[in-house]
Amino acid sequence: MPSAEFDDATELVETYDFLLKFIIIGEAGTGKSCLLHHFTQNTFKQRSQHTIGVEFSSRTVKLGEKKIKLQLWDTAGQERFRSVTRSYYRGAAGALLVYDISSRDSFANLARWLADARALASPHLVAVLVGNKSDREDDREVEWDEASRWAAENGVHFLEVSSLTGENVEAPFLLAARSILLAIESGQLDPEKAGSGVSYGDRALRRVNSNSRLSFGSLSAPTRRANTSNRLGTLGGCGC
Image (cartoon, rainbow, N blue to C red; front, side):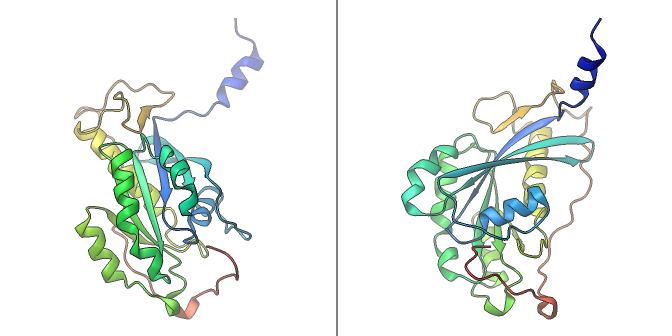
């Protein structure tokens, strides 16, 4: 008979229904690491330096009745790390394509980042365009309408967030996860297929079909928020 200590230990093991691999990509200084930190730690990263190579984090979220573990790869934006970071794109089910709304330059190279991701990641990659630093409305160089149009033309979702204030930071992760799970439910995406970026979790689900709905619940369409009266100033020297 198993010991009581063994039973207690097994209860501490995290269980989840699906494991999804995400990559976070974009130019250096757009606040990718700060966005990820706020999502996983629920706080602003006070001292942020440029990522060297790749950094890893994870978080388990719940969508409807399903527990989803997100495997999150934060990649460096500098050109000198490109050959290293691109190897981590393989098998990614989701991609957050981050730019800085106050930097036209960070928006200009989005097509290249997206092309690399689509060439190397899962054939069913779900991409979300994320306009970071929405708290810097007074310094805006990329209008919401322009970014929204670019996203529509390139077949990606679009949101604006602030990794400083925390506004909307969970939405791009949850939106991508929900889109992926809907693809599983419809049969478009097979978690058992190599390179899908998705795998069954500890609950070892056999299949998801019309007799076993995922029941995600609604995830309302994001809208632009430009409340400059409550805007927080940015910290000097931080890429957030």
